[in-house]
Length: 381
Image (tube, rainbow, N blue to C red; front, side, top):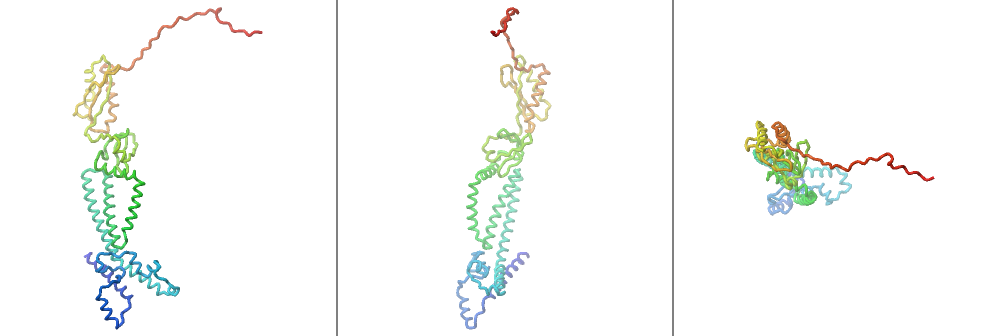
C-alpha cells in the first residue's frame, strides 16, 4: 500500500513537471503540424526537459549542474544570458525565472525520493549486519571497546557506499569529490602515521588477543588491570589507583606479561635460616604455615626448597599457587611476616650480618711533668 502510494506521487510530480515544461513551448502553426509529426517520428537529438530521463538515455543520469543550467536563473549565473534594464523592471521576467526554478525543482523531487530510498535501504542493511556481527562478538566475549570500533567501521563502510549511490541518483558528480578526498586522505595519512599505526595495532590486538579487558598484565614495570582498549591506546589501572595510557604499538612491541591467561598464579618468597638449623624442621614449619588459607590452591601443592647457600645463611624458597591474581602481589610480604614469627616460635634462628671489631693495643701513654712542659716563647725587647 505504501509503495503504490509513493509510486503514484512520483508519477504525478513527473507528469506535472513535464506538462509545465511543455506549456512553455509555443503551439505549432497549422501548416507546420505535418512537419512536426514527421519530426516527431524521427529520432530526436534535442536534450530532454529538465529532470526527465528519456528511455533512449537508459541509465544515464543528468548532472545537477546541467539541470540548473537549463533554467533562466542558471543561465544568468553562468553568464550565458544577458539581462536588460527593461527585463529587470518587468515583473513577468521574475515570474518566469521563479517558474523555471520551480519546474526544475519539481522535476528534481523524484530523484531526491529515489536517493532517500537508497539511503533507507543501506541503513537497514547496516543495522542488520551490525546486529549479526556485534551479536556474534558478544557471544565470544569480545571487549566492548573493540565491538564499538568494529560497529563504527561497519557504519562508515556501508553508509558511505550508500551516500555515494544516493549522490549519483540526484546528479551530484561524486567521482571528482572522491578524487579530492583521496588526495586529502593521502596527505592526512602521511601526517598521522603514528595514529594510523596505533589504529592498525588495535585491530591486531583484537585478532591476536594477547590480552583483553579485565586481564592483569605487567608491561614496562607497570602491573595493573586492563580497563579499556581504544582506537589509539590501551589503558591500565595499577594497584595505586593510577591510570597508565600505553599506545597500542607499545603494547605489541614491548615484552608483556599476562597474569590472567593461566588459571593460577605462582607466588614465591625466600627466607634464610642459620647453617646450624635443620632444613627439614624449617620446611615443616613453613608448610604448616600455609595450611588453611583458602586463597592458596591445593594443586599444585605448596613446596619448600633450598634456593641458595649464602655467606651466612641457607636461603629457603616457599612457593605456592593462587587462583586470584589480584591478591598475588601482596602475599609475599604477608607470608614473610608470618614465616618470621613462625620460625621464631619454633626456635629456628634467622641469621643476620654480624660485624666484629678488633682493636689492637696502642703505645703506652707518656706522662709529662710540669717542669718539662714547653714554655711559651717570649718576644725579644
